[in-house]
Image (cartoon, protein in one colour):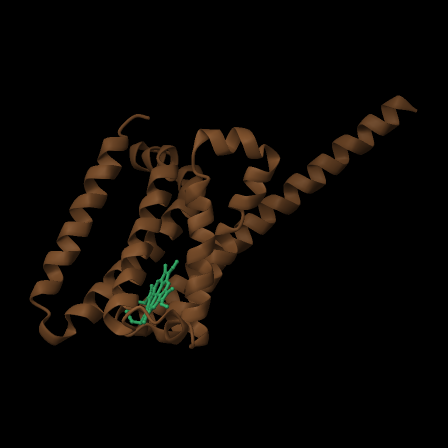
Length: 204
Ligand code: HEM
């Protein structure tokens, strides 16, 4: 795919930069890493979900690039979420998974993570071929995952999602994306129904 290397390069550069940025954070180093990688995962999920709308509203080089490279951007958002939870499990809970999952907000994050893992594992051409129509159905689960992540991060976020402005923007963008998707789904269903009715009429 054209320009996929740019996704790899910018993701790796971002990971390195975030780790470097935490070095000077002193006592807050772990919290900084947890917040930054969690927030980056959330932003990239929003970006891939928004990419078709962005392209529709403003077709151009950047929006076409994001749309064409959604699969890899999605895989990297799983990588960011993976780094986020590895740091949480290791530094905050010493790999005591039961303790880590004892809080409802963290549990919701855990469920979202499992959904993202399933989506990442099936983000390849073989899965698209094997799963057929079910592939699309499975990948609609990115929406419940997004809702769980927003609840998770608004509930326990201590850095970015503790800021009223950021919280409001994230919730608004999430709401717009979900309403837009439901609108498209309803529109497609009613078009399909009309075609079926027309076909039935022409056959009688
Ligand atoms: C798809 C999976 C996940 C994503 C995308 C995600 C994302 C986020 C985001 C955006 C924040 C708020 C950061 C901030 O503004 O400060 C956050 C906070 C947090 N998350 Fe997650 N999370 C996920 C899963 C988990 C899991 C499974 C755990 C642990 C069991 C966890 C533990 C935490 C903790 C302890 C915080 C609070 C610390 C902080 O504010 O950074 N997360 N997460």
